[in-house]
Length: 397
Figure 1 (cartoon, rainbow, N blue to C red):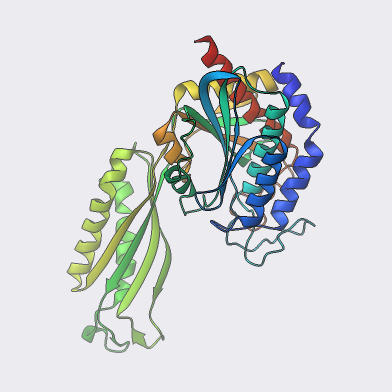
Figure 2 (cartoon, rainbow, N blue to C red):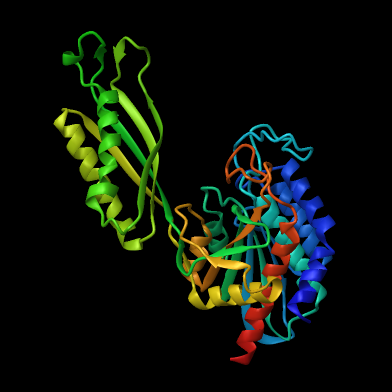
């Protein structure tokens, strides 16, 4: 069967793909709470006759399409969780859950992988090797990938390669963006507490102003990127939350800050805790204050395997033509697909979902985010083609 025929079959599923996506969009569930979503996924996989495991990594679901003969196993992964953000769209499929919404496209990822499972199972058992469908919870900051790996998602049978995609409004519908090597940044968390001495706002000399010191710390941390790191090594240090003080006429004794650190280099990532603490310590000591500092190693960088990238670009050319994909810069966004790609050769690519209108122009994590649903069958076809091409290539080696 040609890959073009695969695209035609996926297009015939568009109505079902849209229905799934809109249903998930109306009923979003955040990390490790994807009970309804995982039940729908599991029922679908059972209906296809696949081997199904539930409660993998708490709320994850895994389907297995076994081949007729021995061979490698390729996994296809989709994340299922929503964000704790209120949906501001006016669409009739907007979120019905207050303060929760699929504003990162995971509803589309789940629907596309369900479609790929339908397509691939409909073709029958592969001649050699297996295809594993991983429906993962809790990508948004809770490391659901790690939880699934701890429950053995890459074993029985052992996964030899893995592929996944992410919708992206910055690319036109029907186009693919991909990066060889480091594709997504590490995403770590920082917690800083500045400990000063409270006092009357009219007599600042009798106090140690934690807010003023916090401001100095925030400004000084930006010198890491501009003065302490090789300018050819990208790094982002952002303080996203700050709390301190009670009234305008009192000097705050304590300020708490939360932030994130992003790098594209595992080596630089390892250096960041020391660099940050050196600055925090220097600023606070100069004002006679104290501090508490925690650095949380969250998501490592996503490393795209070169051979797997070639599989994706070749499959996309066969499906959509030679001009459908482009090599794009790495993203400073984080992705827990990184845990998989540390363990086995992996590829994570972006699927365009922007069609140029006002509805699809909003970025990921925006309260008005939406996508062009014409991309849904394209995603199902791409995931299916990558799996089939990988198994065919392995059989010929």
